[in-house]
Length: 293
Length: 293
Image (cartoon, rainbow over all chains, first blue to last red; front, side):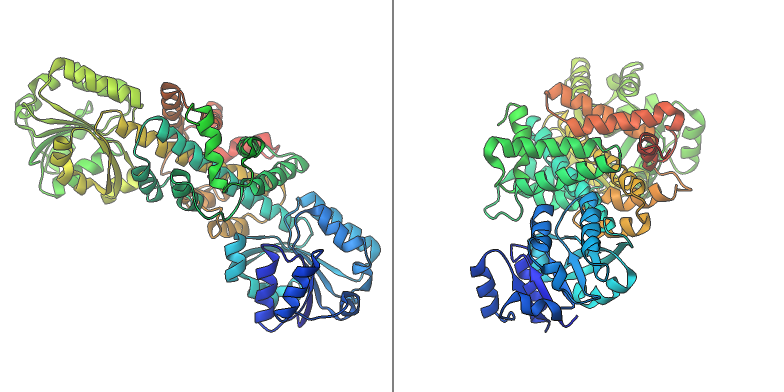
């Protein structure tokens, strides 16, 4: 792809679009926040009326907050109608598998000559900045082949999640199930250690080197003992992502007791007003219930 | 320590005692199975009546199945009474923190001139064979110092869990909480993927390289997709270990919803007659509930 539209210049979208730009791709920015669009243009983004750039774009990349924003972006204006035949809509925001499949059908109802690629990512803001995201892409093989080069700019690992929209989102839901449960499990384990009066620093070191280890334990464990100064991902993100996991389980009628329990722990943190804290602070819900809060 | 008694020549104890022997320690074997004792003696273990060796031993190492066996070993005969003053009882079997503390007190009631070291391990049979166990040792600093050299023969990582019996067992419970929850979470995630018709091989590869990864996912994940030919640890071990985690949580009145949910999944597998299968096969409980069993 030589020329793309990038919609959604948030914490994830901005560095992703910036990496595309740095790799030589012609990127036209799109965001409801005009100031951000202008800032991106000053950084090298293609200027001018979006309407004029749409018919020339090989791809429309979407990285917004939820399914509602995806629909608003695609259907409130003429976005879908103005794309050239054969162009790819690359939907990278985290939505549920059912929503992803539905949005794909809604696009098809308007235009049957476009490709819809369902390609959520994991790796967070750091992965977006470093171009090391994990990309789980589902769609027509021709469309995935067309996206390949651009995906390589954004991610260190690209996986073929399937041929149908919804399968990328389903991959992401499975991924987030483990991420969320692992954070909650680390909190449960360290809160139990705390309740037993054990040395938490020794504990985190021990667990990180044993078969009890997880990526999340190593990353979030130290931040549960000493609250972090910097926040990389907040509690509310996991309320959203584990909510999507639970929705995905409901849609496919699957049994997910650990994901549901973890979801409720994050929601409890958020409802106490701690939604904007680092997600490691879900341990406060355990402390509260353990009489240590 | 130059001379020890090693009690419990099972799947864990045998390789541990063998590694001690190979390092030049004088090891007198002890087991209810006389044939095993004789086999160990032929391998280089010290022969002769245990009663005569007890007063000369620097340490009595215990690696049996549960607290009942520990008590039977220590108190049914004259074991504790015949140890020399200052000798260490090194209790490495997995028991609950409360049981560990109580056994220590029971020893003290018989003899107040012995050291009791609460030193459970993690790393399984492979770790025992390779001498790469993680050891979580709690006890008097003098006793821990006396054990240090022998621990280094058994383990690659030795942690100071505390100064009181029970704290080693509490460390182990926290460790097993994560191990058990991580196996169950991997099963939940892969069963959800299966229910969605996703490619499980691609899924396991993706998860193993993302922030969703855990030691257990990488080890057990592939065995959930293709049942393993070899069994390294069975479902019933986690029924026992997560049972101890739940008991530990009850003793300390801590909130552990994930551990309890995971425990019940392993118990359900065992109750269906699958307790002797590889622990990765807890995924069958999910498959059954997902209509895929």
